[in-house]
Image (tube, rainbow, N blue to C red):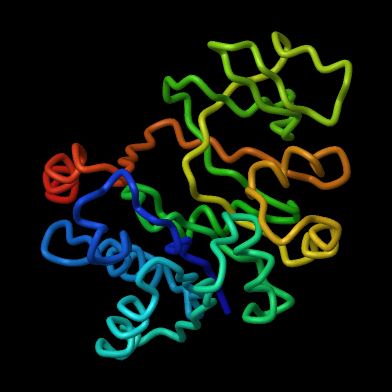
Length: 242
Protein backbone atom coordinates (compact mmCIF):
# COMPACT_ATOMS: atom_id res chain seq x y z
CA UNK A 1 0.00 0.00 0.00
CA UNK A 2 1.24 3.50 -0.83
CA UNK A 3 1.52 5.63 2.29
CA UNK A 4 2.09 9.32 2.94
CA UNK A 5 2.40 11.93 5.66
CA UNK A 6 1.06 15.48 5.60
CA UNK A 7 2.95 17.95 7.77
CA UNK A 8 0.03 19.97 9.15
CA UNK A 9 1.15 20.83 12.69
CA UNK A 10 2.66 24.26 12.07
CA UNK A 11 1.49 27.43 13.83
CA UNK A 12 0.78 29.25 10.58
CA UNK A 13 2.18 32.54 11.89
CA UNK A 14 2.52 33.97 8.37
CA UNK A 15 -1.24 33.49 7.88
CA UNK A 16 -2.30 35.57 10.87
CA UNK A 17 -4.95 36.75 11.69
CA UNK A 18 -6.65 33.75 10.02
CA UNK A 19 -4.67 31.34 12.17
CA UNK A 20 -5.64 33.12 15.39
CA UNK A 21 -8.83 31.03 15.32
CA UNK A 22 -8.00 28.05 13.10
CA UNK A 23 -5.05 25.86 12.09
CA UNK A 24 -3.24 26.52 8.82
CA UNK A 25 -4.48 23.16 7.53
CA UNK A 26 -8.08 24.43 7.53
CA UNK A 27 -7.44 27.74 5.75
CA UNK A 28 -9.60 27.61 2.62
CA UNK A 29 -8.37 28.02 -0.94
CA UNK A 30 -10.63 27.36 -3.91
CA UNK A 31 -13.53 26.53 -1.62
CA UNK A 32 -11.87 23.89 0.54
CA UNK A 33 -9.16 23.65 3.23
CA UNK A 34 -5.52 23.16 2.35
CA UNK A 35 -5.42 19.74 4.00
CA UNK A 36 -8.28 18.55 1.81
CA UNK A 37 -6.44 19.63 -1.34
CA UNK A 38 -3.44 17.51 -0.34
CA UNK A 39 -5.57 14.52 0.71
CA UNK A 40 -7.44 14.66 -2.61
CA UNK A 41 -4.18 14.75 -4.56
CA UNK A 42 -2.76 11.81 -2.63
CA UNK A 43 -5.96 9.81 -2.96
CA UNK A 44 -6.04 10.41 -6.73
CA UNK A 45 -2.48 9.07 -6.92
CA UNK A 46 -3.41 5.82 -5.18
CA UNK A 47 -2.24 6.47 -1.63
CA UNK A 48 -4.26 4.33 0.76
CA UNK A 49 -2.82 5.41 4.12
CA UNK A 50 -2.14 8.99 5.16
CA UNK A 51 -0.73 10.19 8.48
CA UNK A 52 -1.52 13.80 9.43
CA UNK A 53 0.31 15.46 12.31
CA UNK A 54 -1.53 18.13 14.33
CA UNK A 55 -0.66 20.71 16.99
CA UNK A 56 -2.17 24.20 16.53
CA UNK A 57 -5.96 23.91 17.10
CA UNK A 58 -5.49 20.15 16.73
CA UNK A 59 -9.12 19.18 17.56
CA UNK A 60 -10.38 21.27 14.64
CA UNK A 61 -8.34 19.23 12.16
CA UNK A 62 -9.35 15.92 13.74
CA UNK A 63 -13.03 16.91 13.73
CA UNK A 64 -12.90 18.05 10.10
CA UNK A 65 -11.38 14.77 8.95
CA UNK A 66 -13.88 12.70 10.93
CA UNK A 67 -16.87 14.76 9.77
CA UNK A 68 -15.85 14.01 6.17
CA UNK A 69 -15.27 10.29 6.73
CA UNK A 70 -11.52 10.77 6.24
CA UNK A 71 -12.38 11.29 2.56
CA UNK A 72 -12.52 7.53 2.05
CA UNK A 73 -8.86 7.03 2.95
CA UNK A 74 -7.18 5.38 5.95
CA UNK A 75 -6.14 8.57 7.75
CA UNK A 76 -4.27 8.36 11.04
CA UNK A 77 -3.50 11.34 13.26
CA UNK A 78 -0.17 11.93 15.00
CA UNK A 79 -0.96 14.26 17.91
CA UNK A 80 1.72 16.82 18.78
CA UNK A 81 -0.56 18.92 21.00
CA UNK A 82 1.86 18.67 23.92
CA UNK A 83 4.84 19.91 21.90
CA UNK A 84 5.50 21.00 18.33
CA UNK A 85 8.27 18.71 17.12
CA UNK A 86 9.35 20.28 13.81
CA UNK A 87 9.38 18.19 10.64
CA UNK A 88 11.99 15.60 11.61
CA UNK A 89 10.68 15.16 15.13
CA UNK A 90 7.13 14.93 13.82
CA UNK A 91 8.10 12.19 11.41
CA UNK A 92 9.99 10.31 14.13
CA UNK A 93 7.00 10.45 16.49
CA UNK A 94 4.71 9.11 13.77
CA UNK A 95 6.86 6.03 13.10
CA UNK A 96 4.45 3.54 14.78
CA UNK A 97 1.66 4.65 12.41
CA UNK A 98 3.49 3.64 9.23
CA UNK A 99 3.69 0.31 7.50
CA UNK A 100 7.31 -0.84 8.00
CA UNK A 101 7.89 -2.09 4.46
CA UNK A 102 6.76 0.82 2.26
CA UNK A 103 8.25 4.27 1.55
CA UNK A 104 6.45 7.34 2.91
CA UNK A 105 5.71 10.29 0.67
CA UNK A 106 5.91 13.47 2.75
CA UNK A 107 4.04 16.63 1.76
CA UNK A 108 3.74 20.02 3.45
CA UNK A 109 0.10 21.01 3.94
CA UNK A 110 0.62 24.49 2.49
CA UNK A 111 2.14 23.42 -0.84
CA UNK A 112 0.21 23.38 -4.12
CA UNK A 113 1.95 21.98 -7.18
CA UNK A 114 1.62 20.31 -10.57
CA UNK A 115 3.50 17.22 -9.40
CA UNK A 116 2.18 13.74 -10.12
CA UNK A 117 2.73 12.26 -6.65
CA UNK A 118 2.40 8.71 -7.92
CA UNK A 119 5.22 9.40 -10.39
CA UNK A 120 7.45 10.79 -7.64
CA UNK A 121 6.75 7.77 -5.43
CA UNK A 122 7.77 5.50 -8.31
CA UNK A 123 11.01 7.43 -8.86
CA UNK A 124 12.14 6.63 -5.30
CA UNK A 125 13.35 3.14 -6.20
CA UNK A 126 16.05 1.84 -3.84
CA UNK A 127 16.95 5.27 -2.44
CA UNK A 128 16.83 5.93 1.28
CA UNK A 129 15.24 9.31 0.56
CA UNK A 130 14.23 11.13 -2.62
CA UNK A 131 13.87 14.91 -2.59
CA UNK A 132 11.79 16.67 -5.22
CA UNK A 133 13.81 19.68 -6.39
CA UNK A 134 13.86 22.26 -9.14
CA UNK A 135 16.03 25.07 -10.52
CA UNK A 136 13.85 27.71 -8.83
CA UNK A 137 15.78 30.81 -7.76
CA UNK A 138 16.19 31.11 -3.98
CA UNK A 139 18.76 31.97 -1.31
CA UNK A 140 19.12 28.44 0.01
CA UNK A 141 20.09 25.46 -2.11
CA UNK A 142 20.67 21.76 -1.60
CA UNK A 143 23.95 20.56 -3.09
CA UNK A 144 24.27 17.35 -5.12
CA UNK A 145 27.08 15.51 -6.88
CA UNK A 146 27.00 14.37 -10.51
CA UNK A 147 25.06 11.27 -9.48
CA UNK A 148 22.42 13.51 -7.87
CA UNK A 149 23.33 12.34 -4.38
CA UNK A 150 22.91 14.89 -1.59
CA UNK A 151 26.20 16.38 -0.41
CA UNK A 152 25.20 19.47 1.54
CA UNK A 153 23.38 22.80 1.68
CA UNK A 154 24.32 26.43 1.17
CA UNK A 155 22.97 29.92 1.64
CA UNK A 156 24.31 31.82 -1.37
CA UNK A 157 23.84 35.21 0.31
CA UNK A 158 25.78 34.46 3.48
CA UNK A 159 28.10 31.77 2.13
CA UNK A 160 27.08 29.38 4.92
CA UNK A 161 27.55 25.68 4.09
CA UNK A 162 26.29 22.59 5.90
CA UNK A 163 27.72 19.20 4.96
CA UNK A 164 29.15 16.06 6.58
CA UNK A 165 31.98 16.33 4.04
CA UNK A 166 34.67 18.70 5.37
CA UNK A 167 36.34 19.00 1.95
CA UNK A 168 33.17 19.67 -0.06
CA UNK A 169 33.71 21.88 -3.11
CA UNK A 170 30.45 23.83 -3.37
CA UNK A 171 31.33 25.11 -6.85
CA UNK A 172 31.58 21.54 -8.13
CA UNK A 173 28.06 20.68 -6.91
CA UNK A 174 24.73 20.92 -8.65
CA UNK A 175 22.42 23.36 -6.83
CA UNK A 176 18.67 22.86 -6.57
CA UNK A 177 15.82 24.30 -4.53
CA UNK A 178 13.80 21.94 -2.32
CA UNK A 179 10.05 21.72 -2.90
CA UNK A 180 8.81 20.54 0.49
CA UNK A 181 7.84 17.17 -1.04
CA UNK A 182 9.99 14.06 -0.57
CA UNK A 183 9.93 10.28 -0.17
CA UNK A 184 11.35 8.66 2.95
CA UNK A 185 12.26 5.00 3.51
CA UNK A 186 11.29 3.65 6.97
CA UNK A 187 14.73 2.05 7.28
CA UNK A 188 16.04 5.56 8.04
CA UNK A 189 14.21 5.52 11.36
CA UNK A 190 17.20 3.58 12.72
CA UNK A 191 19.43 6.59 12.09
CA UNK A 192 16.82 8.89 13.66
CA UNK A 193 17.11 7.11 16.99
CA UNK A 194 20.13 9.23 17.96
CA UNK A 195 18.35 12.50 17.19
CA UNK A 196 16.54 14.63 19.81
CA UNK A 197 12.77 14.87 20.18
CA UNK A 198 12.60 18.02 18.06
CA UNK A 199 14.58 18.60 14.83
CA UNK A 200 14.12 19.48 11.17
CA UNK A 201 14.00 16.84 8.47
CA UNK A 202 16.44 18.67 6.18
CA UNK A 203 18.94 18.93 9.05
CA UNK A 204 18.55 15.16 9.44
CA UNK A 205 19.22 14.51 5.76
CA UNK A 206 22.27 16.78 5.83
CA UNK A 207 23.77 14.95 8.80
CA UNK A 208 23.23 11.41 7.46
CA UNK A 209 23.72 11.87 3.71
CA UNK A 210 27.22 10.38 3.95
CA UNK A 211 25.71 7.20 5.43
CA UNK A 212 22.49 6.90 3.41
CA UNK A 213 21.49 7.33 -0.22
CA UNK A 214 19.59 10.64 -0.36
CA UNK A 215 19.02 11.69 -3.95
CA UNK A 216 17.39 14.48 -5.93
CA UNK A 217 14.48 14.03 -8.29
CA UNK A 218 14.44 17.03 -10.63
CA UNK A 219 11.19 18.24 -12.17
CA UNK A 220 12.13 20.76 -14.84
CA UNK A 221 8.57 22.05 -15.36
CA UNK A 222 7.75 22.25 -11.65
CA UNK A 223 5.03 24.73 -10.77
CA UNK A 224 4.80 25.14 -7.03
CA UNK A 225 3.11 27.63 -4.72
CA UNK A 226 3.75 28.02 -1.01
CA UNK A 227 0.40 29.09 0.47
CA UNK A 228 1.92 29.74 3.87
CA UNK A 229 1.36 33.50 3.89
CA UNK A 230 -1.58 35.85 3.34
CA UNK A 231 -0.17 37.39 0.18
CA UNK A 232 -0.32 34.10 -1.71
CA UNK A 233 -3.95 33.19 -0.94
CA UNK A 234 -5.37 35.16 -3.89
CA UNK A 235 -2.60 33.81 -6.09
CA UNK A 236 -3.52 30.29 -4.97
CA UNK A 237 -7.05 30.71 -6.33
CA UNK A 238 -5.64 31.43 -9.80
CA UNK A 239 -3.06 28.66 -9.44
CA UNK A 240 -5.77 26.07 -8.80
CA UNK A 241 -7.86 27.21 -11.77
CA UNK A 242 -4.87 26.85 -14.07
